[in-house]
Length: 379
Ligand code: PMP
Image 1 (cartoon, rainbow, N blue to C red):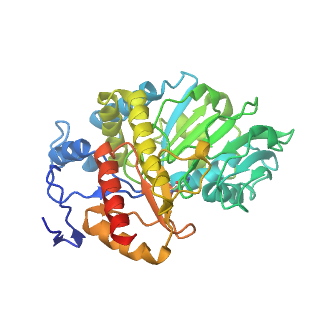
Image 2: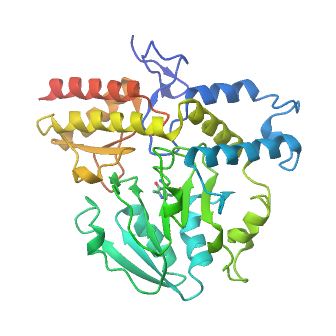
């Protein structure tokens, strides 16, 4: 079947796919959502929950939305076994707003915090935090181009840190922590591109945050999971909506929340539970990553991934072609084959396949098939 262009998107030639023009979407974010969830949303788009209106058109203070919102929180709590003494906040502003909200809430004006610099996003988090207090960079792999996470014994931790900030999965370089720092200092972690990909022990963190647009739902929603004793230190003269206390006291409804994104995230949580929860996702995600890295590693150097084996991301798999003059051909031909958004971040070059929860093994198989044929045609 040849690819045809409909509405600006080249159509995927996958007979097995149920919706006619759905592509394999390897985007790093906003990223693919589970098809089953999108179909449910489609069915409810005109009338939702007995309201006679769409979820986007009803009050966030009405019973139907309040119930959906509470259910979404409960499902997330169940999925991640979030302890009682943690608050779950449904916020706006993206993970980037948390780069400022975290120091404002947790550092105290002029205080200090430790930050690990292991990639593009931790670098941004550091730059924002530096505006509010003393940032002690405990390790920095920028010079090597972010290829591994240094052992915790090598980190230069400060003695007055209010918290330790880490980015357990760096979305751009595809660098992932395989362990958590063993420290008494509260760990604040940017889990934007790895949340819900596997079980985690929430009690080992002081705060977890994640933009929704990868493993949770649509852009516009940011989840913060914060231990309640860390809430309450927000400076009175800073924007109220960044105060965790204000948002916790109002069940994240101090102002109008992103209702559609919250509703859709709730559907993703429900879908995840039906898949067997995060333990089942972990098994699948590990198998997907193993297969893709396995193929890259045995491609005789035609494709390579530069990250230390222990730090290879399950979610974002960058790879480069030995001959980068083939990059454009790879991208245009993969797109025609229905494999979209494989271009690597401009800072790294090459390719990146993001394989979040909504991407099944079929997506990885289709990618490997394409990579094999491309290699055969260009070796
Ligand atoms: N942190 C990480 C790890 C990310 O991958 C991203 C976005 N790709 C961000 C932060 C920034 O998120 P946002 O655009 O939601 O502010």
